Length: 281
Length: 278
Image (cartoon, rainbow over all chains, first blue to last red; front, side, top):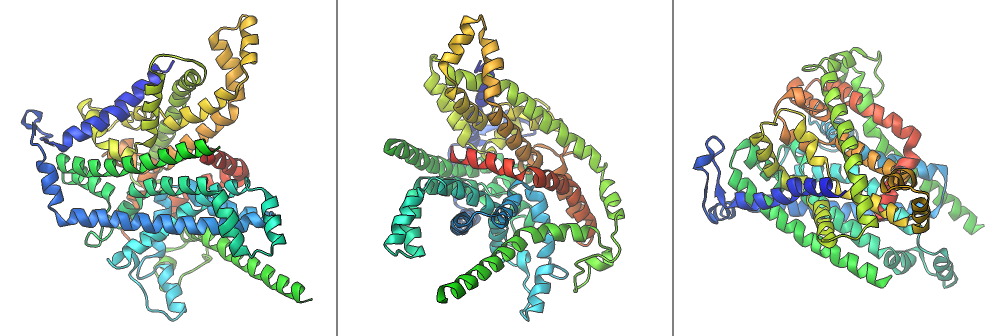
């Protein structure tokens, strides 16, 4: 009964993982496979010697830290706030905040690309109305990464809000009533009751979001194609570029292995947390 | 009295913040629809038009006839999403059932494999799969967009959760009534797992309908590409000035989803919340 499912995993997860590691030690000739041969760690040496490798890694880390930080804090505030009073207005806000999560990244990227267009885009018009100088948004290396982070935050904040709101349902209201008797302020209640009680979900959301952010590709490809001057080039963009654009399979595999190692480390943290949570219950 | 005034003030601030939030999340969609109905002159000007004077519905006709025609991409999207859903249901239900109800050799190791599949993103596995598909000469067919998704670890998890909750006495009673295992699975288990199956269909639909990465790296021919790729291509082909046509294409892809969402947002949100906590 499980044979088809396990076959699928073996062919499309297990085999590719092993093959990716093998490829990273090979010089691959796609035209003539007999020319492909083992070259040891040469691909690694060459990739690690390139300055743009470190820029790519750094861009990915910056993106991840910013996106995880922004989404988690906005989502927490939004969830606590929307949860405090139930009503039609609140659920409308929630429904709208969630809509981008189920909308294609292509369509969201195109809408923002249009709004951030430097000459006729809406954002520069708004800046002009406010008496501010126009920005080049995605077309300047100093602002492009910020714009991509902004678009990702806008798209995904509604999802994390939803998870936090569900977690808040599990906090017993008596705790807040007790805190009210002690005249505890809103901020104290948030840090001393809310945060500790939803901390399991909080950790999971942060780790899942971190893993997802390390894999960023779609927004980069659609909004900037890694530019200007590699300012927004990320790990997965490099994997794609080396594999399908420069056709340097070995290099691409090295970038892939780097991402694999990062995701494995994060996954280990994730399962450690999971074990702890089970233990405490 | 003091309390009443500050209460009213904080209530007003709350309403203002909510209106701003609503605008932040809805305005880009409004802007997409508005742009899709504007003339090129209304689009390419430094003073933007918010409500087009005469709605330009012919933009939708231009978008519809983009490339080989959007229907060709739409057809690919439908075929791929429907096949993936069907394939997953046929393969995931028995697998999840076995993991939930039976003891067998290597169960732990095999379940470990499922966990591995759950954590490994397609961004890591695509290169070897691409090479494999090109060796099998399947690039430029729909297959690379369907068969790699025959197993979905998340679906196994969700279904297994439901199957484990089913009362053993119910199954024993069914066995006494001469039901075989297949009957137990289809007549007792499946009806009870309906919410999980609905969730799996929803997630697979949303995930594959919207997906950009996989069809992008697995295809190099319009004949096998999906709707999101067509819309993304419109941008590079139409040049950067025809935003009205691009947004019309965008609307063709997004508005049906928004309409469905308007009627079912409560259930959709519930499904996502449930699976997120697990």
